[in-house]
Amino acid sequence: MDSYNSVAIISGLISLVFIVYYLRQDKLQHIPSPRSTGPISSWFAAYQYVNGGAPTIIEEGYRKYKGRVFRVADLNRWTVVVSTPALIEELRKAPEEALSFHEGIRYSLQLDHTFGRDAIEHEYHIPVIRTQLTRHLTPLFADIYDEIVQSFADGMPATERWTSVPVLKTIMRVVSRTSNRIFVGLPYCRDPAFCELGVRFAVDVIKTGVALHLTPIFLRPLVGKLISPASKRVEEGKAIIGKLLEDRLKLFKEHSDSDWPDKPSDMIQWLIEEANEEERTVDSLVLRILVVNFAAIHTSSTSFTHALHTLAAHPECVAPLREEIEGIVRVEGWTKAAVQRMRKLDSFMKECQRLNGLGALAMSRIAVQDYTFADGTRVPKGTLVMAVSRSMHHDDAVYAPDADAFDPWRFARMREADGDASLKHQMVHTSSDYVSFGHGKHACPGRFFAVNELKLMMAHILLTYDVRPEAVIPSGRWIRHSLLADPVATVDFRKRQT
Image 1: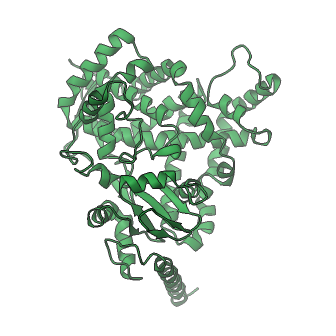
Image 2: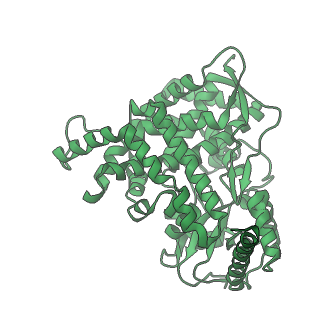
């Protein structure tokens, strides 16, 4: 094909994208936008949006249309943004047959191509995460802590000299090992090949999702088939834990649904019990284990990386945190109840997440029928609707007196004012003005496990190491409305001196 024809085809495709884009936005003319809404000019706004400008554009909309619904341009569609706690509460309560959570997450993560249809149509891993994983936190707490200690000892030995450590890479491995201690158990959680597989799959999902969001909609099925990571990673997983899963399926078949001596208590067992007969296969189990690895590794590693950089930049937080942790552990040991009592640690971690969450928007929903909000705003079928996150978390009207300032004990004071037993201000709690984990029945089902894991990791670092930052505190990288941790930023560590 000569260059003229190539240019003609590319120009035609781009023109088609513009036409489709213009037709899509025409149905949303009544919803304001902080940037231009023309068929050409909005494309430039969309280009800025996907290349680091999303938080600025969303902030403009949040300030300009305070209390109202607005929209922002992405490359392939408009995103309608709800920007008040009342509207977020309405988004939470909207029925699935009107504003669909499942279609929203399917679109946001491009699940047809990242996880594959089987994981979408048979989501038996979700109730396992929501119920079994949360229910077993207390009896498995010692295992979680043990793996955290061993993971850091292996990957980040405490020495007398300062050592520069790549934070994200190191933390992803710690999270992978710790999570898989509960998912697949020893010795596989310490198998470097298996841990690396979980990390690779987590990275694959993010990269594939980003690539597909930058791809014209009509090309996604083709591109998705070419770059989907699921099949390849499942085969790699089978090579490592396939025999283990075969043995576990055989054991379950022998004992059926009854209890038996030494019955395993891990993700494999819970998945086998939750799956229907057709889904009790090695391939299906490997895929689900990879999916829960993604859920555990990506979000927790990103959140903890931001928190660790914040700790290094605020050495004044170290002594109060150490004092609290040591005082509680001295009496109660490393238990779930003990960590629950660490109010300053919980406040520190939640404040880090408030200031540097996973993105500027949350709570993806797709309108599966025309929908009208209580304020009269109409969104047609097929519209992507999301809740503002970062701008609200940085709003003085919501988090007075200075929402942009890092205040490590902000939530500890709130918790103390409401009574120590109050869940309202704890990191694991969701609300219409704190949506880092989403909100409502579709909030992150694994957040109870994740929050305890993250607090244990931070507590261990505080009691084991001294930390200091690199010269410039990394701010991460924005791609669309998602904030990714800097993959190469480092923090200096040494054995604790005081």
